[in-house]
Length: 200
Image (tube, rainbow, N blue to C red; front, side, top):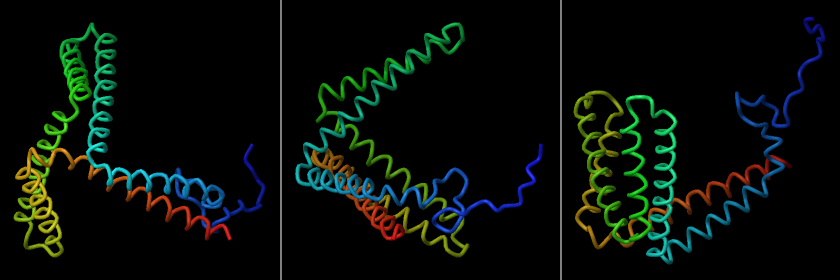
């Protein structure tokens, strides 16, 4: 039967209905302490990573190695589940490469860090050059100078990483991990403080 009840749907505590798939701000406000605590924890971890950047580099490489092994096992499991298909050998080869690369990264994290740092520099150079090329194709349009600036900075960072390789491979990945943890920590702490203010 259709619902004939004319009573309005109560508004959430924030005064505005939440967007699709978004939790109510009033419900999140009660969890402000968790945001603050997790943000503080990430901030401390970021400071430790900045202070012990070599250890952070090794930790990041080990993390990548574990992820590659897990991904490789997933590929192998998928290959055996669809072994009747023509892509069985391809999936198996990809899985073995992932597992082998992950095992090598765990066995020798410093050598893996050198390889990952070189790949990072090459990736940034390629992305920076691509952004500059896109800007050149659209340089007459207003606002596209920001694409040029972004591409130039990315290209410069990639060149600096490649120029300092392999010596910088001992600290580049650890520094990136530290910066990421610090930004995440600050963001979660600010969200927690904002939720606390909205709760009042």
